[in-house]
Image (tube, rainbow, N blue to C red; front, side):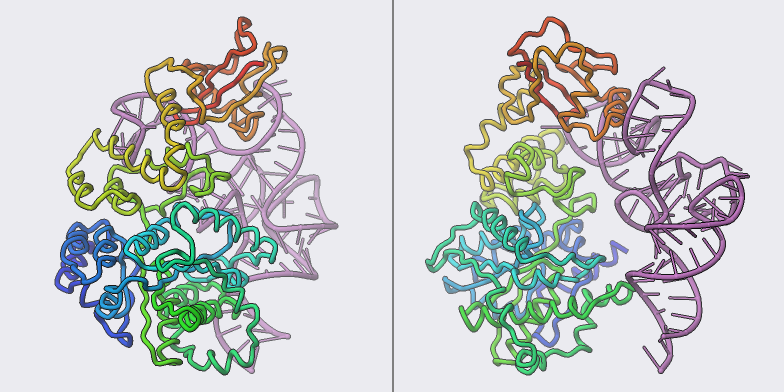
Length: 467
RNA sequence: GGAGGGGUGGCCGAGCGGUCAAUGGCAGCAGACUGUAAAUCUGCCGACGAAAGUCUACGUAAGUUCAAAUCUUACCCCCUCCA
């Protein structure tokens, strides 16, 4: 099945699809998305080499793997040959930080800016009150205004390292759709905008269809999300002259709605551009780990852990991620593609360094490197270099006779005493790189100022400081 | 409003009076092997307890029973069909 779709694709070049006129817009199924962009080497080549555009932005965006599908590609390409174009991307404000899953569109906008265009970041202060139902199995919880405000601030600060904000021609702008959505009046809105939407068409969108066929409920509230997102595009076009909307491939239906609304209502052509969803080579959504999402905010995830996330990506993903999330030149990455086996570790370090430098500043790297070599380098490395791992302070007087179980629980490394005991019994705990058991007691010889390196498995570490 | 189906541990999904802290799968944790990768294999995977064991859990609340996730009743929520 994989194979046949591969053949079919190559006979039916992607360009054809993208060249389709608006009325012929068609979605590519979700399964084939992974195929086209990552798993299928033939398609990968098509994406990287076969596409040559007039605009430098599209050339680089597609070469790096940001391009999934678009409306009228030729016209958009032509449009982008001039500098200073506006393109927007909407964010839900359901959490107070963005995570690694948001990085594709963020880096896409970064590229947009690099090529002299102006990214607009649309905060969904209004639409978050509704919740995007696309492909989601459960309805979003409805947030209060205060929560939304708080999230909005958090997201803003997440974005700052990636883009240059300001009023210049290619400087990013930030807008909030609550500014217009909150003021909408129902009947006038229905008359001016609602009449352009066909329910027949809307229920045909994959995003809606999956909800309907899987017997999930789709409330009228959620159903309207699409219409409001389309209206956002309309507003940004009339108010600012924005003619491109970016988004993940799951946003395709919503984006097309906006493109169509503007065409029907104003007779003008605007463009939609989607990026592929980021799937790791083992088929998981990027950015989800045991501990939860890989947050961009330093408050939720220390730069050290952020770095480690990239350091530990799958072999098969390294090159792809270098293209997407670093500023390293295309040619240079192309030369790295042949690297195999253990040497990939060097590329992972390069990847981790570059992404972390962008997200947290290059200054953050030296402490991370010190800690890393302290933990993973020569055994018995100087623990004072372990500046980036969590600390647990223990008074000398209490140190006597305290069990590891207590330390593990109190420091938060383990969720319960049982959890800590299981870990110990499984041989997963080391003190100063030596396996410890349940009977371990802190040696009587320790004095204030000493420290112990407590490890849970190979990757979770805690510095116990005696005071 | 009527008829039917359903709500089980992070998720999926068995169980349908005692042998159920609840089969199985996924996810997760640890160990082995490695390269801080993947794959594979092994162990663990509610809380407390050194252990025996105790407690808390199968939508909520009452009840029947020596005994309930399993039966009864009421309520809440979800889905389907009809009006």
